Length: 108
Image (tube, one colour):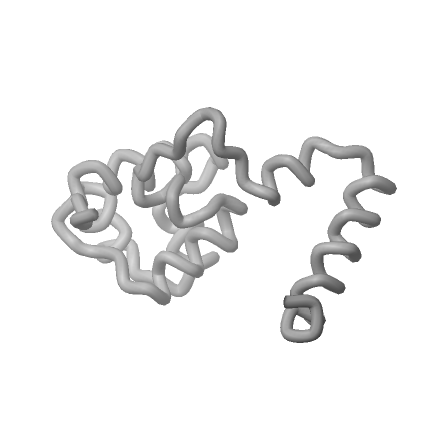
């Protein structure tokens, strides 16, 4: 996959506007200059890994959302599925997954 700033830019603008941030507010929240944000939203400046992670955290989305990578509809992420569960079930499955990940070497 090749990075396409002209795909990413409008996505960044939509995420910002949907969440009610002005460019100045986003700059203050991320530490990125207003000029940099404008360039990224216009597709003229590539996202650094640091900027990508800062925006993912702020907007509470994954990299695929920001980068415009379409997922197959039948392929749901674990986070998405966990997010739709009741709080108690989500806590149970999260703890179970973390246990499996922490003990993966012993299990496999």
